[in-house]
Image 1 (cartoon, helix red, strand yellow):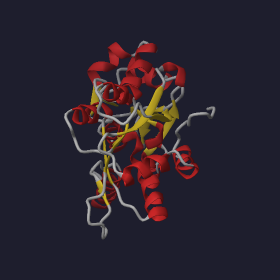
Image 2 (cartoon, helix red, strand yellow):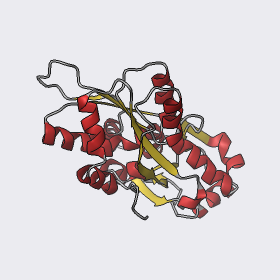
Image 3 (cartoon, helix red, strand yellow):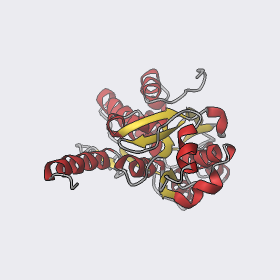
Length: 271
């Protein structure tokens, strides 16, 4: 039976809203400052959390920022080549340490969070999320899994964590031909939530957003199934006063509270 135009309209509107929510276009606040606001490069798992942190920072200080979200590996390559970002928040501390070793940063930075991954299924999918991936295993055994989304593990830390979890459960060889790879974890989440895939593994911080909660259901993947997603941030050598103030704000009580609310584990705190 063909869906009614009204149903397609509602579905299309929902997908457009989801795409807008997960858009990784740089966020720019226009103001009266004579100088261009400093650019901040951030891992895409921070999409919702860092936008909230930046808004709180602006409300408190009046200072503006430009946020860009993407894969940590791609940002690291750009920064190694001199991209003009003043702060880098990576989902993998290794990329920050590489930049530090190359003399591109002020210092070796600081750990600001640890991430988690989830198994997600969009509404209407035959996949039923659970913590031990039993539903995914069953769907694969039945030959009913067609497409599954993760971030590209070659340069996206959350994609690498997804691969480690699937490998540890013996699912990787069978699922690899069915993978839809996102350029970053936010794109992988969009693939899964939109129905372009029957499910996916991506960042808990994205799954907690209202848009994703409306789009489907998820279960946390055990943290011991993958290497810790130790997230490090650092000031680049060209960092100015506003960038330095924002760097400090992320570590402040207010900044940490926002990160915690978005599902991140924080240094010095238990799970």
